[in-house]
Length: 292
View 1: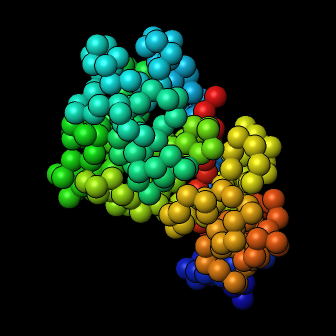
View 2: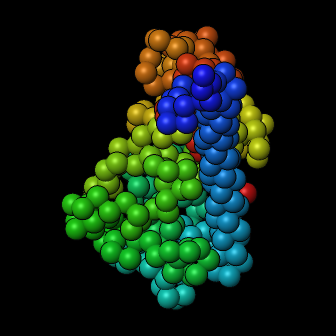
């Protein structure tokens, strides 16, 4: 009797050991993807902080070269004499390159006008790029009065005026509030020839907290780095914790625009980022970072 195995028979089943190996390999792949995502986020955060420091160094170098003036705010006559953009501005009005040490839009002097970026906030980046202190070429097509050109507005050409941030979907722009100048890190869409923009929260609470804690105090309402949610276009609602508005709405399930931990009321607002599992990774926040 022939008891030799039939070598023509193919067994397509998996042993427990083989299945275990497959499960382990899948686990390694999944873990690698998650680790890769975390590394990408960490890299973006480090790059954003590096951009912030680059801009600070550029402003310091500009000030040293151009009679202690600030880009955008440099007095009109000085800018013209130095061969920098001065256009049709006169320096006789707020935000009209008046040399008062604040980056203002010309709408009013009450605070950061994130929703209005023309005159000094727009010229700021042009002056820095004209002087060669930052990479890129910004504001080359702006009007002589410091506004976005009609053509760039029609094509929503944001990168012609504002440096893209390392964190995808965000840009850098500027403003002032209560005597301090700030960079603002946020989404912008669209831009108009009248200088108005739609500000969007494109940072998550987790990323906002990471940036804040690395270069400041990690507290969203205090210090040199502060946050707010996107979509509020009034001055006092931006960062005023005492303001009776919903800018700090952060309770999971009560509002889609969460950024801070707390509720919709100013009394319940906490000085804590909403880094919980529900909204920690949702893109709702903007940041402002004080000039150094």
